[in-house]
Image: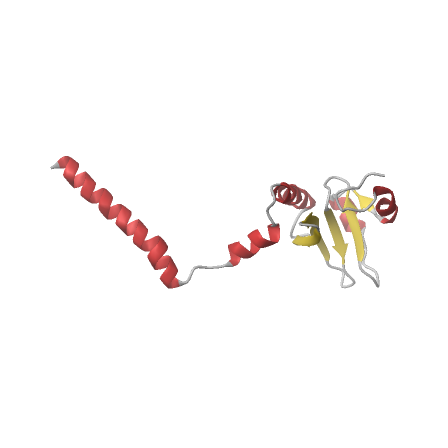
Amino acid sequence: TANNFYGFCSSEKETKMTKINFNKINLVKIKSSNRRLRYYSEECKGLHLDVLTSGKKVFRFNYKLNYRSKYFTIGEYPLITPYLAIKTARELFQQVKLGNDPQLLKLNKRIELSFKDYFIDEYLQIKLNKSSHFHWLLKKMG
C-alpha cells in the first residue's frame, strides 16, 4: 500500500482512525470519556479534534517536516468554529508544503521588539523619511 501524509501505510492507520465530518452537529454530539479521544477530519488532511478527559475539545493540525511529526494547536471548540479550523489547517498545510514550519512562524510573531530596537529600526526611519520628503518638497517648490 502507498504511504499517506503521516508516513504510515494507509491500511494500518485508517483502521484505527475515527473520521467524521467537522460540523457543529457532529462536534456537539461528542462526549468526553476517561481517556483522550481523537477524531480526524474527513475534509482536511492532518486536522484532528482532541477530546480531553476534562471535556475540552481542541483542534490540532498534524504535519511532518524534516522527517519529524509535529502538532500545531489551532484552538479550542467552540471558540474556533469547524469552518475556521478547516480553513486554518489548509493554510498551514500550504505553509508546510512550501517548507515553512508553522510553529516557528508562530514563535517569531510572538517576539516583540525592545524599545531601543523599535526606536532605531522603526521610529527613526519614519522620521527620516518624513523629513527627507519635506526637504525634497521644499527644494522642488523653491
